[in-house]
Length: 163
Ligand SMILES: Cc1cc2nc3c(=O)[nH]c(=O)nc-3n(C[C@H](O)[C@H](O)[C@H](O)COP(=O)(O)OP(=O)(O)OC[C@H]3O[C@@H](n4cnc5c(N)ncnc54)[C@H](O)[C@@H]3O)c2cc1C
Image (tube, rainbow, N blue to C red; front, side):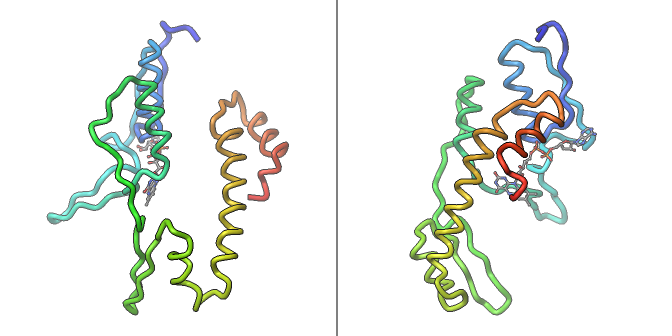
């Protein structure tokens, strides 16, 4: 691509901002266009009546992607990652609390009375999800497409429409 040409990125969410930084690092001129009054996209906040609400993400679910990005751009991240376990908990009106533990046994114990054979079913579900994730992440997500036909043909070839 001609590096004298300016690249226009529509949207200043995490996707737009990281793409812009990667391109700038490669020597391209980049302009970002944003329709909202500030950058951030879904990673924005709403501040009202002394309260702050996250509009979207609260934790790094794929921190390795962010680490790759920082490395590519030569950025030292101003923070370090801390693994959360439980990742979060869900509180119901009836005071029942479910913790999303990393340990499958510990996680499953909470649901055995609700869903018989939960642990086995959950492991099967995770295995299926892992296969779909690997198939999409490595061969679909981390690829560029010149047109819609190319992406559709890859999805059909990989039989990903069953997702
Ligand atoms: C409730 C919620 C919780 C989430 N929790 C997590 C989490 O914990 N961990 C995690 O990793 N991810 C989480 N996610 C997902 C994560 O927020 C998104 O994947 C990520 O922020 C998407 O970034 P993006 O740049 O692709 O899109 P967006 O953030 O949607 O950015 C798109 C930008 O484009 C702008 N735009 C759109 N159309 C135009 C136009 N025509 N002209 C100009 N500007 C335009 C929009 O205003 C916006 O700023 C969560 C998402 C939600 C909604």
